[in-house]
Image (tube, rainbow, N blue to C red; front, side, top):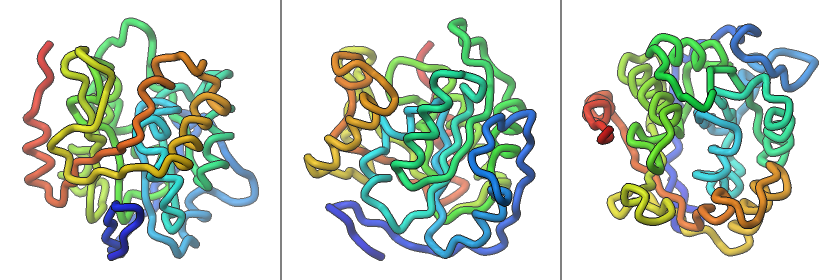
Length: 253
């Protein structure tokens, strides 16, 4: 166990990992040449952490400070949408390099209508885009989302919870982003009942904000920049039964 700036992290090695195929039809962004991502992941000796999010920028907005601080983590960031976005996809690559991470973008529909996606579609996009099905820790959205509301955040969260509860994704712990906005009453902030809260040092928060404004290109007055939480918060799940309990939680229509 080790602690960093008030955030306690328990390191556990998880065995029996399987390496998943990386399907070009789903994961449209090959990030590096000279060997597959699965090969690169296999040789890492650090604690393996997957960050599974809906969009490029979610990893930074909701957990970027923690990712910047935890340099012992071997990071893989998967965004479920925007793989063919000629603006956001290259920005995602630049942010990954600053986080010291590998990653991919799948290309699920992310149109303005936000039509519901089939459970199997989201699950397949995640599994086919990952270098492994086994990690020491997985970070993802809450099935209630971080604010009111974005359907893709909730769908990715529920897909991860289902896969983890069935053993198709393996990790000792699952960390869910823990934020709420009081049903649009205020900007998203750390949930009072979060299991872990990481109060970012000011310099780290500034670095995180710069990833959103300078690297992703959000205006300093944008919603994203104004939201950028200095207190990063997580719900921590350690069992399939906890995952099933979270799957029962529903956001009001």
